[in-house]
Image 1 (cartoon, rainbow, N blue to C red):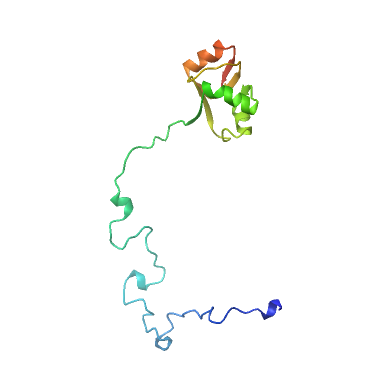
Image 2: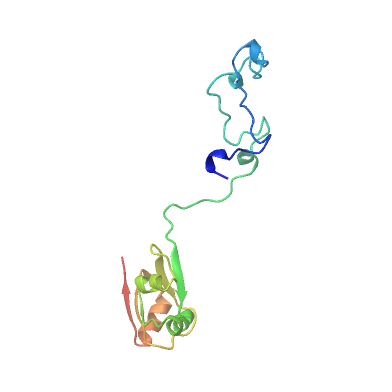
Length: 149
């Protein structure tokens, strides 16, 4: 077998219909497109999500809620998780860079520490936000906090 002898299987290929070639094509003068209207003319394109006259889904379903474009989303860590993360990944300084290297946050995430749980060790934090309860617990355990911009 050679590359130049390979052919498609019998019946696998068909000649393309050549529309708009007059009466002799067997498709008539309108080329199977009907008489008038946008669909019979060149360049016609159906609207996106057109449902043939039925009320489209984006109009059938009611709008709900509100998206605040000024909302700041944080990746949250509680004090109860800090000891576990420290043991598992060997982190003593909690920075966005260290957390990213260990796969705990993405590169653009903002990090916030919340005060739920107990803090057993002494850790230093460089994070974007911290709650008052967490701040008091970290400083009480002898740790340091630096808030990033």
